[in-house]
Image 1: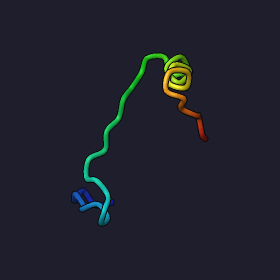
Image 2: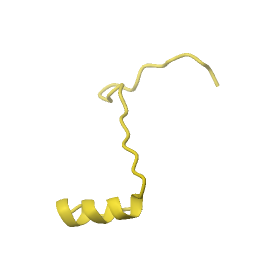
Image 3: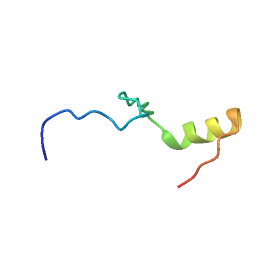
Length: 41
């Protein structure tokens, strides 16, 4: 694998974000109850 930084495909953002939680199970339940999110695997 190359160490070069490659440009993203056209129309795709070059920035990826992430949020990390200490207790993901509780956080997922809260997101579902608060915002109506649905878990998809």
